[in-house]
Image (tube, rainbow, N blue to C red; front, side, top):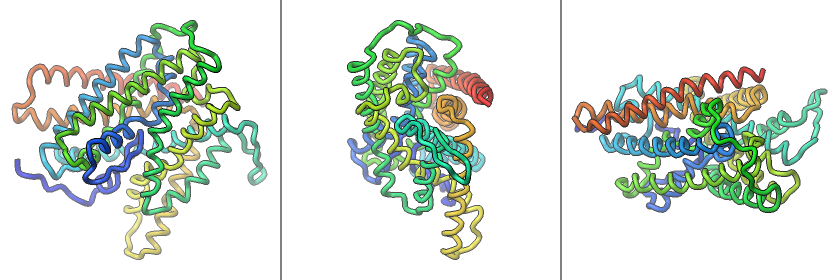
Length: 422
């Protein structure tokens, strides 16, 4: 095939080098081990906090759906790998969109990813507000004659810390700090073990085998656990040996799946139906393991907010900047970043329900990026070449049907839950 000459003016391919779930810094020439760490950091994200809640919503039997979601996302990750092999000029997710569907494909996938990044930034602020309120309860501050307390206070405090990082053009140092995500995931699991042994213990009573009404929420949150497909091409492009990507994907998926499963089972065994959308909020106040779990959980969003929101702010900034003057461009960047941060603060205070927002992200956006788009792209590329067998065609159609059902039902359910809170 003649190599495709891709445009270089796209915001997404230039700037979207970071995942929505975990955060990873992918250098060129990464070794096999480094690539495994990068991809594990991509997959293991803030979905870790909500996976016990997802299990409580669906019941024990929903673990089979969790395994199904993991298998589907692993398979679609391999489809992305095969799409990348078609042309060596394809280096990012929007590049695949351009290769398959032209400029409209790039635009569509770019829009979905921008919206997803924006909503994830909001979820970071909600996470910070909830957990800081758990760590430091009862604090009240008067601002301009108004008393601010609880989650709203800490959302504002977190935003004040985050804001200067969004003004930076080079975010290299923050990328390394965001790699704490893997440590945070392990610390959370260890804290749950500690809480079970030293506190409430592990018990099955009060838990349900299957909860049909909660399955849409559970499925949506399970998809949040296995996202990161948008950055798979970046990890792929960074590897020394690109043919090893399927092995890297398998190892990373298995390790993260085990960690997710252990966390989900521990959280549900300890807290049963009372488990909250962020399991850290169930941990007893004042305990050392609670402080460790919350502090390690809080570091990642603080560092990663600027990384996640940067593609959005750069896209807006480039639309607004019509000059080559460095000072004016710097001022534009500061004003744009500040406006975006303020908008996420307002929305985080209006919709302070982490589980509902994550469910919406999982069903509407993550399913599109992780399931629908890879399947459609693969079929579009390989059907014309006769490279898709009957069995594979049936499997992909089945996955597409599942993806569409989860997207429709999950989005409807999560929006209904969010609207019901007002």
